[in-house]
Amino acid sequence: TLSEECPPDVQALGRSAWTFLHTLSANYPKNPTQEEKSDMKQFLGLFGKLYPCWVCAEDFREWMDRPENKLQVGSGGKGGNWLNSRERFGLWMCMAHNAVNTKLGKAEFDCRKWEERWRTGCGVGEDVD
Ligand code: FAD
Image (cartoon, rainbow, N blue to C red; front, side, top):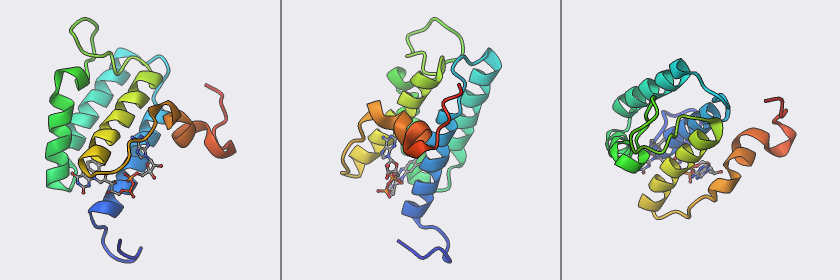
């Protein structure tokens, strides 16, 4: 991978983007409002359109479009209620990342550990909420 002084390649961009995305889910509310759910759905829709690695973005959109992965704001429907809580949303993000890991031939991450990795680990996460 390139030095910190060079423009990011796909790997460096990816590492930074995953840091952002998992930190986003670590800060997602435990009990989100309709507006918070709606904002997140819209944000990820746009993220999937604008992510500046076009093959990455296309595959990410395709993954998000599968019925079992679809983000839905209201209840009902056959989605997985992925936006209903931090726990669900963190798991969804972990699964999204694992889909890319699998595609790239990397080991899957154990999603039971996402919160420790991205929120509470290393004495960082003050578990206030
Ligand atoms: P990364 O995969 O960047 O992971 C960083 C850290 O996250 C790891 O060290 C680990 O601690 C943690 N982690 C790993 N897996 C998980 C998980 N499932 N849940 C929670 N934490 C985890 N690259 C391509 O070459 N082709 C693509 O099509 C492609 N698509 C991408 C799509 C998106 C939306 C994003 C954000 C990135 C994409 N990338 C793609 C980049 C790729 O995912 C990696 O970021 C890049 O290969 C660098 O990998 P890495 O081994 O340094 O660790």
